[in-house]
Amino acid sequence: MKGKELYVMIFILIPLTLLMAYDFFPKLNDFLFLPKPMLIGLLLLVVLLGFFTKHFQKEKSAQSSFWWNVSLVSYLLSLIVIFTLLGGNSQVGISLSNPILWIVVALTVFEMRKECKKAKVHEVNA
Image (tube, rainbow, N blue to C red; front, top):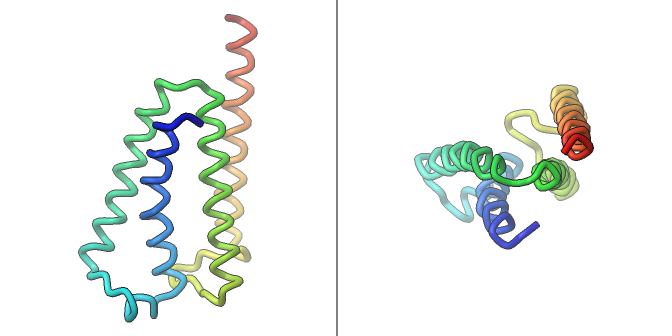
């Protein structure tokens, strides 16, 4: 990944990490108080940045998009594992034993694989 992509990824991952930390460790709010409007603002920021990255990725290669998706999925799964090992319990039900999480991961992997095949066909035809 290039510098600009890395900055965008970090700018997205920091709010995601904070939101997941507050979900897994609700008592963290006693230590580092963040008002609800700020948490809602962080959530909206993540959603808006998601739209921004889609626009940002259209200008990039399929390989870059593939690695972006792999990095994001790996990071989120790693956070779930780490927060669970640290004794956290998700308030909204995000856990490794949740079948919906694995369905979403499987769909994401399927979509990434489809994009990768499409990129390879496009390279061959170009």
